[in-house]
Amino acid sequence: MTVVGPFGLSVRDQALEADVQAGLTAVEEGLLEATKSEVPFITEAAQHLVRAGGKRFRPLLVMLAAQFGDPYAPGIVPSAVVVELTHLATLYHDDVMDEAEVRRGVSSANTRWGNSVAVLTGDFLFARASHILADLGPEAVRVQAEAFERLVTGQILETAGPTDGRDPVDHYLDVLGGKTGSLVAVSCRFGAMMSGADETVVDVLTQYGERLGVAFQLADDVLDIASDSHESGKTPGTDLREGIPTLPVLRLRERAARLSLPEDIALCELLDSDLGDDARLAEALAALRAHPALEQARRDTVRYAKEARAALAPLRECEAKLALLELCDAVVHRAG
Image (cartoon, rainbow, N blue to C red; front, side, top):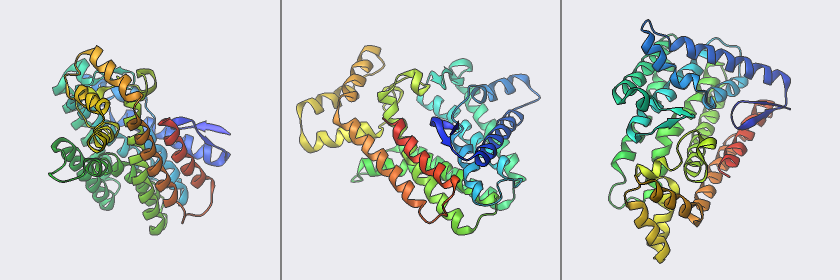
């Protein structure tokens, strides 16, 4: 048993391990090449998060999905570079919107160089991703464009909030489908599509990726409250401080509205106060860590991970399928 990829994913088949490791190594080289510029400062800014590391979750999914066709097809590594560049670009923009100070254990780009440079660096990465896509054909361009539209729509809907009468939890889960699920789904789609897998297999893996992506983000929501910065790579409570209504907070508000318990109402009032004060933020984090809403969010994570597992049922039994199933378990484990 060998450990590869994020969360300590164990791959038990030597041939699959070799394919995945070779693919991820090639992706890493492709990321460094794609983030080079004739302007040294742009290279430094564009490679800031690349060199900080990361789970490379999306490229890993590309490599595993490619096992259902020809895993050595020429479009696989470039498509994995595209999805990771797109993901990295969104991180630069997210950190500006969230005023985050830490990302992947290093200073965020906006903290180091300011908001303008961070936004423009994200744009630079989007441009480089588009350049690579142009060589992968019009279908790849269309798939990526549709996913990017969903991603941006999800971000806008999160900013706008639910419409009157819409259940906030349902709204939020739809937001996550766009913000996170769309690009994870494309990772699986590109891997299968570029490998020449059957269209039914491409569709199955795309559905799996969508559900896994939501589970992955829900696990992040839990981590933002339950972990320390060493575990998550960013400052705990970042979403709380910025007033972003992640699932544990939404579950808390749902419970407060239903039961009207004084302690729930008091915690909601604390969350609605100015959490720019470190002591107040620490108090809110401690209260949420002990609250049933956090456990409910964990159960929601498990539910989506189970749906991802179920989506894989039509696929033939093989080592790649076992690895994809194990990723579902790893995401749940990550949420505690």
